[in-house]
Structures are given as structure tokens and as C-alpha cells.
Image (cartoon, rainbow, N blue to C red; front, side):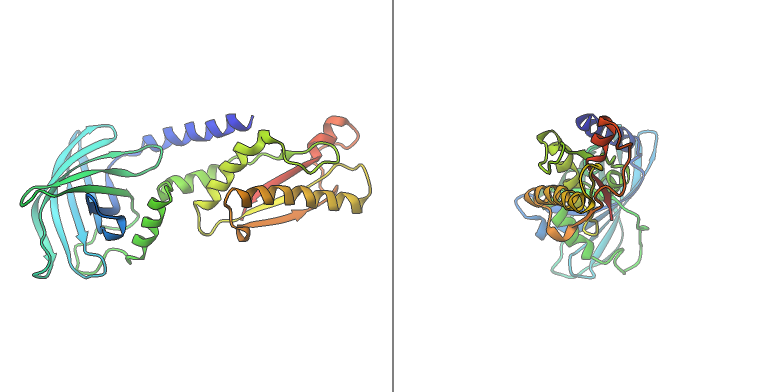
Length: 287
């Protein structure tokens, strides 16, 4: 059941994101081959398409500088998830003698699983330097002014996301909102975690790690057999077993909150074996 839910989330996510059009504003990084993302420059891309023809603009910003260049672009949509374009007219810029702006052509493809528009570029003059571009859909408006489009602190966050192989913000947010919570069940009077739940719990860990401001709340429960005091302690041990598993999977302790209700919040009748089994559980929620 848990594996089916994970596959369902991936299938729905893939199809929902695949239907997104290329048109709009994208933001990301551009870096020459052989260099690290920490050496990259900021790149914004504006895409407008009619049929398979593409027009728009790029805005390159030098990191930790007020220098920038806006260039018009033209190209084609080569298939439903790929584009090809080149810069051909400088619209406006602010520069210094130490900065050399060379127009480039690029081939980018949209990855429906990660949400990134990524690919390669080749400069159109000089040594024809090559490099890579990785971008994600932006909520910013394209700016023609000298002021930077967004505070460049987002660049450091994005570099961290790339280094840790996180998906694009829109994909991560979609996964958080659409994550399907299911209880984890325990055997009678036991607090040990069953192996069958490992994949599901690891997926939950990944979603939490993908958000700097997200935590997971674990709530332990029991059936009504035994005393109230004992069941409180048992539900606490069940919640703690999940917490320990999360921490072993790399989830920082401060991202985990535990609670334990004992027999106070049953979801089924404690007079039947099936009802008791459904009450021997741990529930989850994002906070």
C-alpha cells in the first residue's frame, strides 16, 4: 500500500508538471564548464512563444555587483520540453572595462521530475566558451532597470539546493501539499518499527529536508488494553521509535516533534481485533 501511494504521488506529479508551458520568467545560474556553481552568474530568462517560435529576453547579473546586461533572444521550441535560442541584440546594460559580455546560444530541456530547465550554452564569439545553465520557474517580474531583479541571497540557497540534489521549489511545494499521510501500525504491545514502512518514512524525510521551514509531528497511539498510564508510556515509545528512524535517515532532531496520546484518541472500536489493530498506530502531520 505504501509503495502504491509513493508511485501514485510520482505519477500525478509528473503529469501535472509536464503540462506546464515554457512561457514566463525563469531564474537560475550560468557557469562555464569546469567551474563550480559558486563561481556562477545570475541569469533570468523571459520566454514568449507562438507555435514553435520563441522570443524573449535574458538578463545576466554579475554576482555581488550592480553590472548587468539585457539581451533579446529568438529561437524555437524543439519539442514539448526543449528549447533552443540565441542572444542577438543588446537592449541595455551596465558594465565595467573588466567585464566582457559575449552573446551565447543555448539548448535547454525541462525535466518533469525535478522541475528544472537546464542544458548547455556556447558563446557566439571569441573562444566560444561553453558551459551549463540551470533554472527554475520564477515569480519575479522581468526588470529593465539597473536595480537587481531579486536580492541575490536566493543564489546561495539555489546553489545549496543543487549541491544537495533537491528538486525545484515548485515541485517541492507541490509534493508537500499533496503528500498522502498514512498511519504506521504496530503489533500488540510492541514499539518496534516494521521494515515494510521504511520506504514510506524515507520519502517523508526527503520532503521535510527539502523545506528549511518544515517540521514533522509524530503522534503515538495505542489500543485500550492495559492501564492508561502504561498505554501513555507505550505510545511515547512508538513515537520515539519513528523519531529515531528519522534521525538515522538524516533528519535533524529539531525538525521532529513528538506527541503521545495513549488510548485517548482511537480511530476504531476497541472491542474487535481489527479495531484494536487500527488504534495501535503512529500518525503524522507537517507543521
